Length: 155
Length: 329
View (cartoon, each protein chain N blue to C red):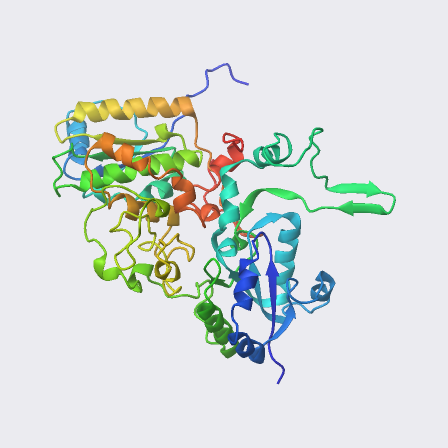
């Protein structure tokens, strides 16, 4: 056994960022060379309203410990009200997954405009911190008949 | 030429699927004309030994209803699978886990504790006796099947060739499936034997279906006088027609009740509960976070509503059930 302190657990976060605001904010954070936790895998979507709850559960199944959705501030949606649609789905999804044993801190919806690179940094750092306190998701594999490989086993 | 042999078996189910076979009424004559029923414990005197005595693959098809929770159900599912050419998951429980699948929201220990320890039910059990797998008595020993930690759909236990969806499967679909099997006109293996479009497509009320967000408040059927002509979603009722496969001839809609999703997802859907939730939540006509949260309180049990028939097929399979976190309360 080594005396070196254990590496802190590194959560995996899948992020769905709106093309018009939060994705641009992440570009800004990048060009401004802001330092933030490297635990996020970003998927660019045209609007937070495009984020089907199926994307969220699939990300969790495929190994994410948490899912972050970034959209435009209320009233600022490029498509008028896609972010509101996202808000309605997100509220209900968080409740449903809570019943199913997925802690609400694993799902996060944030409004981050194109100019808020610093806010993007703070949100990601904070979410990584929260997930480190929660620990890995450890979703049980979906059972398969004997002989077939279990699907989506979490490490 | 001898007729193809078929069997029916039930696992964790309510018996409604057996009732559906009886509901074939005159069509049952059509069915027995086409096939020989060689195994049907619910209705005819065949025993497990009779099935064990068959050659492997001797039955052309076996229709298995019910989810899998016990060791006995698993053994029987495996036996039926081995003895039949085609294994057909019959009904919602077998297809996607059904109502018994909702038990995956709780740990097995939590469920047993509620039933046997806490006196919640009417049984008086001061010593907290639990069912034993084996009991000896003067006449010998008796055993009971073991409960598995989670409820599974049939295809999570044995390979399934086809699915007959529904709670129970509509008579029309049963006759079509038997005919297809006898005539050898089956779709590719793994298919659900029902049309692959959503219920709204065949719904008689589709003309009044809202195009945009229009629900101001979610209502439950007992709270309103339901108009028998207008789309149920337009009336604020939680109808899962937009996410559910059709093939039932809108049975519930014609009974003036919203669709609860028993025929399960269409083939393009990856997760029924999430898809149904998406279709429902986006119809809410409100943009205020606090208001939305208050309105969502009117859906008291989202998991039981959107995964009513498909909890074991959820992408977030059974975290609650293994976590002990819910404890069966």
